[in-house]
Image (tube, rainbow, N blue to C red; front, side, top):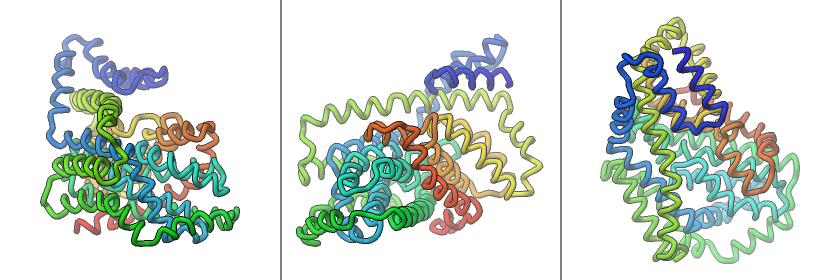
Length: 429
């Protein structure tokens, strides 16, 4: 067990991709002991079986839908609606960025995708209106984390597959935490703008131009985009479609409105969209399969039982247990990709939280919120690097500016951790 852990950490430190790291680490016990039950053939079979799950189909479909929406510039339509209503308020446009991330997250299910799609459009606009570039980059990077908390969420699907918890329950459970975090980020944006000031003249001029188009025209033009999360999530919650079927509906709907309604995507764009989806998906598929094999090795080595015994003394003290689990997940989120973290840590922690009487839906949301913070923390922080690349700023400059926003995120995490009804109020558990 110690050699496996040491090998895993060493491979990560030298920069080996996480998927390859998981495969090599899974093979270490069989290299040390040829009689070990998990040999290379077993690992390959475990990888295949880990991918042979119907609900996994939702992952590439939601990815494809999000990329289509990105090509279709849907984030701009959403931003225009929110700017129309709150653009002239103190911190109104930064708040509109957060709300846009909430809505776009309900389309893409991905943190980096939300950061890229919203950031590419909003950061240049905000900077042109006098906002600090590093603040804009940090705001988009942190708010982009809402993409994995607001349903439909790809990490929620991964957690569901690892824990046998209903995907629908996970989606419902993510609604209120996502809204809570979004509201708290908006409160900080208001405070920041109140403290540092805004160029009201330029902002009012920009919003006036938008309002000159008229509310009806703005809503009519944006209504198709606004309907996307309603159609997808409404179909799931009403029982009309399963989450996997909803993912397909999302693809068809996003393709239809981008091709025929907004005409922001052409038939020539379809091949690049599919290529980009494939490039995004392939590493994810490798990680899912490799993590499934790694989890099998951990099970054979009785790692979940060892963790349960180690944390067993804390089972009666939920407050301290959740402090320890949160601390571990925050560190893991800084070092390992979100999908891999979920697939590795879920089977380890699940027996412990069940012993402690913690609702698995609550724990799943808690895990994803922890890992969402990892999107904006070095060295892995994907949102951080996406925002830095778009603004040509150093990742560390963006990370430094994001510290107050992450502090707000952490306060929301504490509330979600110790007030389970924030997560469970809509599912009645």
